[in-house]
Length: 204
Length: 316
Image (cartoon, rainbow over all chains, first blue to last red):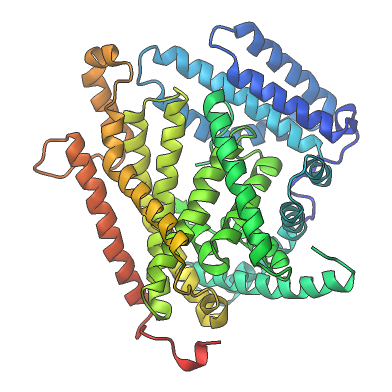
């Protein structure tokens, strides 16, 4: 598995990427808060935010198709919840505003996460006094996601190569067995990692 | 169930963020005090495992498929406190890497899935599993806890959405809860199956998490969780009939009723023979919970033949 499939574009070099992570975090938070809190009538604000985000997206040199695909991937839930708002007074207007608002927030978040490497985010978290044990947890998770997804792919490949019919081993029990195996392997790996961390002088 | 940004208003965002941050601070302190440093990599890898396991598909009829959420499973494997941190880490990575779940809404998502899931589900699991001995009891308890975490999480999600004025509670609560009562059955079965699978490979990984008789304060918290479940199931429909745009309800009532039943796939969520009233909805919820408790016992019985007290060889 390509080791960078999660955040392929977060390490590009562009003016947006080069901004300090703390600045980007604050700006994203401020933008999302403003958009989420803006009253319904403020159409110019929504339009201005959309324009600003599009300019930033263009500056970031991330392939537009990738951004659109990410947005579409997450949009169904947004539409689903917004759909429920149709069934109340003034429903249509609410629906449109809700959709605009959450799509803008989503786009801002996608842009932010794809222009900021995860390690820089961890530094920001550490600076705002998030407990060390939690930052360690996140760092470990980010480090081993790739390893475990590889492990999971290997398990699936092994199963596919040993089952001759299309359905064999594809039942819930088979998949659960695989998930169980995955947990056993990760907890064994955790013990080895602990020894390795101690050998390198880590202390909690 | 990841709430994106833009659906919650500032009051709800602030409220849920504060509650989640407070609960996390308390949990971090408790975990730091009680766990050895050896557990830190285990927690990190468990979080990664949950992330990877959520990508495994469990086929459901008609080409759709479900996946594990994993809060109750995690709580059964590493304990409630660690489960809260593990699930929170999963949510943070999903938010910061995949933009799945909003940044401001992170508090709400942590509350719905990590805190209700890890702490609520974990305590429920402990109470139920400590009443019985052996793997069978653990499996049944984990299955039921898994169902409860999904249902309670969806109820909390509905309350947050409606308190932001996004959607009316009387619409979103029955819709979310009834759908998730079905989804929860899947979660219960998968949780049980995975727990049994782990026990068959490395029994000590499951039995080391076997709950000891729990101290009184924890039992009180668990009682609180149980009470919250009863409230959500029994009183939710009542709360949803509180005035919320009453003057419009009169005009749109017929329409809303139809909309509600169209929005919920489980359209006959009402007890047959009773008028589809608030009482009937509450009764249906209570019956559903009891049925699930029975089903969980059955799951344990089916998956762990000859349960009872664990065999000497499997005990550490």
